[in-house]
Image (cartoon, rainbow, N blue to C red; front, side, top):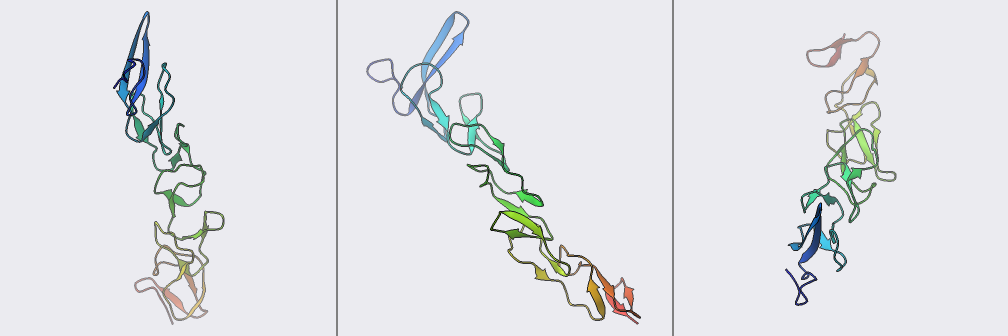
Length: 173
C-alpha cells in the first residue's frame, strides 16, 4: 500500500497512525467501503465515510439507521421529526430521509408532513398518497364520525330512526 517514497499510501489506501503508549504503529490500510480518501499527510485516519454513513470505530464505515442521516465525514444524527410517519431509509441531510405516512394520514409534499384524512376517508399503512380515498358507501347514515385505516372501518352515525347493525355494518330500521 505504500508509494515509492515509502512514506505515503497509494490511492486505494489511507495512513493509519495508532499510538500505543511509547510506541506508534504506522501503516497503510485499505480505504473502507463507502468512504473516500482525504489528505495525503501522515497522522491519523485520512479517510471519511460517505454521506449517510459514519465511522464504525474499527476502521470501516457503517450505514446510518432508518430515520438518521449524516453528511460526508459526519456522524449519524436523527432526521427531522415527521409526526404520524414511519422511516423507510436513512438520509444525507436532516430533511431528506424517506418515510411513509401511517394509516389514516396522507402525504403533504409542500411541507413533507403527514396530515390526517377527513371523516369518511382513509389511507392504508405505509402510504405516500397525496389524497385520501372514500370509505365504503353505507345507506342511511347521517354522517361519518372518523377517518379510517381501510375502506370498511370508518366510523359513522345512522340517520334518526335507524339502528346500527354491527354484524354487517349497516343502518337498519
